[in-house]
Image (tube, rainbow, N blue to C red; front, side):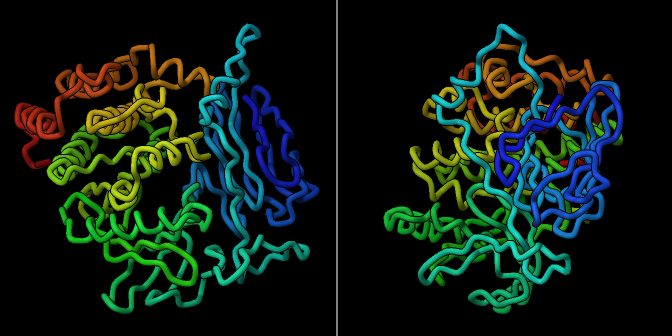
Length: 430
């Protein structure tokens, strides 16, 4: 396995991870992998290679290390994962067999684009040798320079995550007197007046929609040259973090996965009543509340604001590197998607929660595409013997290659999951 640097001062450099051992990555002289990124800590993160598997551990860096957009202390890495540290982005790759030449179709489909490097954070103590974060011109505020200041009615605290479409901040809503998650879209995402109008119109439509298993949208708008969306802050972790933790600590209890499935199915049933197709359900969109384990589906406001063409553009953005394994076959082919694609996305997330790995994972992005479109996933019980056959059957049906072979809709899925829970004596999950 290797790391390919996709952006930053050392772009295009490939780092071989070898067969076994520990590699320190940073800008310090003591690091085995020394980089020229002044925004990176001297000791940024460590990579442990053992028995063909690779683990990343943040080395107490000042700005943090992000894997697939999530700030990470420790996790197992897989091909396709994107690491961001300082102003450098890495992609985890495994070498293709000599007879494979499959990266080109990815580019032809527009699936692979550069990933935005993680920004500098103002107020950090570590020096960056004078290196400045890029700034936006005109009257537009840089969405990466909001820590410690007030934006509209929000007191901005800390970064929660960064994605290709924008940056999410943890904030205090002074109107509602509560914590909130504030997503600010990159200006280039809303460069056209028509895109801004569509976003604001759709957000107004979604605002009244509330459901216990949806992340509640509080407000949205355009201020200081930026489009923003404020929503409920869920104190817990997302399913992507759960899946990474599974790779380190062992399998997740299937009961928790069943509970997450029931809750997200309820959210999708509610969305269907309002003719909303999410289009982009990934583990990062599923938030699990720490207090009671309740699952909430996020991103519905963004889903409503996208027409088919815009949704395809978001799907093709750089974050696809980490999310590709959860795409439906029709999404991977650039075809029209409906609610049954959402069901596949959910099935892929549930599979990963049960097994610690996505259902279709190749040694390269192109090979992953091939598997999504052609190869039947291994039964989850191959990796987790305790999974009840009834639950396994539901997950595998969700992963059918043809939409017509999946459940007809979220309501049908929910009924099946509730039947499984009752049969297994787990009615408390409902």
